[in-house]
Length: 403
Image (cartoon, rainbow, N blue to C red; front, top):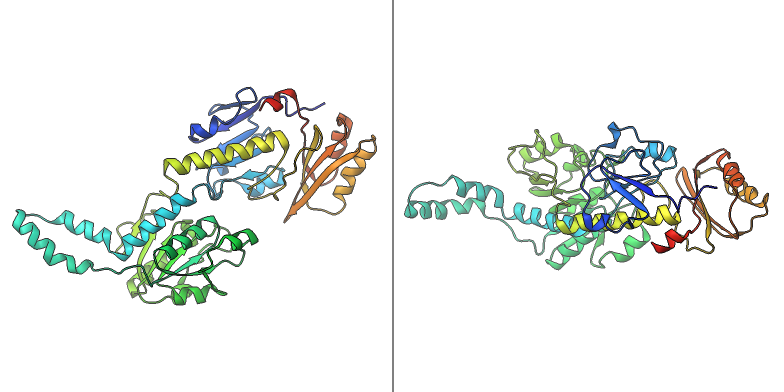
């Protein structure tokens, strides 16, 4: 009989994951290392898994961060493998960097810094040059200005909140906002029904959307043509959300005063009115530790209890244990599959104590607690059901209780 809870779970780390997170894994239940063969779980930050053959042994992938563009999510979904991430764990770090970007642009800090570095001469000459040159770097203050926030997830909401506290007006646009996000949004945020409306009314625009087919080159020539003159555009989300050629054209025309982003590239390097940072959004000790702790807790709960929260390809399914015997099934979202799982259990006289089934797009996930141990023949029967992608039997063992 399979017993995933009693065996050691092997975790392969492909990037440096903060020790405060890795130490949350009980050593008698988890083996962790960068040279693990046939891993059950892969933990990454920026490592590109598209260039890697994911072993058949893998049951989960965890990304200590929010974006998952470095992971072949669709391929993992086809295998029934959840891809976990940690949205919000680095939200404060990104929020602070967005604020820094707003201040750098509004006060012309980067060209002012470069100007000072070019000055020469004795003290008197130096001071005269400073006084004569500082007028060219006159900036603007934030209170009373309008910030448009595109994407109202955890980071977008925090950016909106800090802008309001600084006296700014905030417009928000997010056609896919969740109920929880809407409830936690500051009341002062005004809703924009169309992205063009937000862009027309904002002096600052900050992007906080994931990169997918619908957001690639979201900021393009057409939307830039809607901007006010001297708009400050901030992108701390993903590079390809912005059409860089369109932005450079917007800068030359005077529509964009500054483009501030966290994604350096040759095309943007040394361009006037462009400030690029070396992907510093989550580069704080606190953010790295928060992400590591969050991903560790998610992976442990999934490995031990089959619970799923914060994935990019599965529904959230969390069910408290009703009995020691649990079966977790990942499957394609097709009709009557739940009934077939129930039939497999009824055929051997198993009573279902509790069951949760949820779907997300083409994926579905089911947790079933039974009144007694599940025979191997029942697990095998569920595996053979058309549409089932992965089956895990997760009885509570003495070792898992110690965790």
